[in-house]
Length: 241
Image (tube, rainbow, N blue to C red; front, side):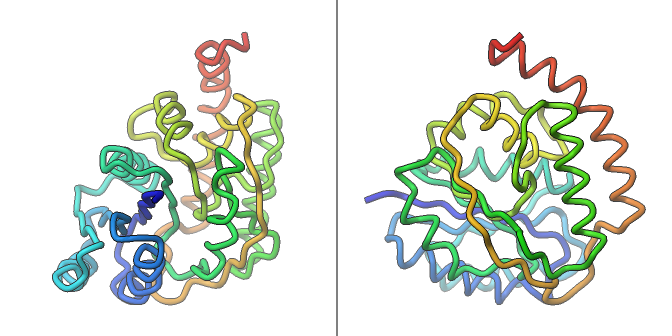
């Protein structure tokens, strides 16, 4: 039986976290007893981890983990390493804000053996025009810097097999702030088997997004600077230069 580990970063999500736990715990229960749900509290200042801790006492397939705040990218990278160390055959990542729909997971699971990664494509985002613009801009910047075209590079809805993920995260700098973006690029540059499936992407279900437009522009400037350097590094390591 394939072992699934679902990993979810969380930061100040006390309004959403219990619904998120219930929704995704049902997934790991259905897949099998060895499968796990692991949520990584990224140093929240609210009651997120306390809710996780209490909830975990009665849910044996749930692992609540807390850590110092390091941002989404570094937290996701730590979560992937945890899943690999836990013996996952397949690793699935989503976010804790209630914007994704767990019922759509099963179409990903059904084709898990046909692809190295199955990644969601937010073709009809419902979380505002500014986010749509950011996604389209990121796609153009990736094409310019990395010379690859990716449907949706930063989607928090992705299923990956253990073998390729283990290899690919070795190419990501520690604590990198756009881990999923760089992972998507690496899959493309290595010509691995990636399937993009359209997914629902709802408005945030509660709480306040910690990333505002000012931060987005700052992240964008840093990303553009980093991508040029990272492209050379990746080509050297993958053997494309």
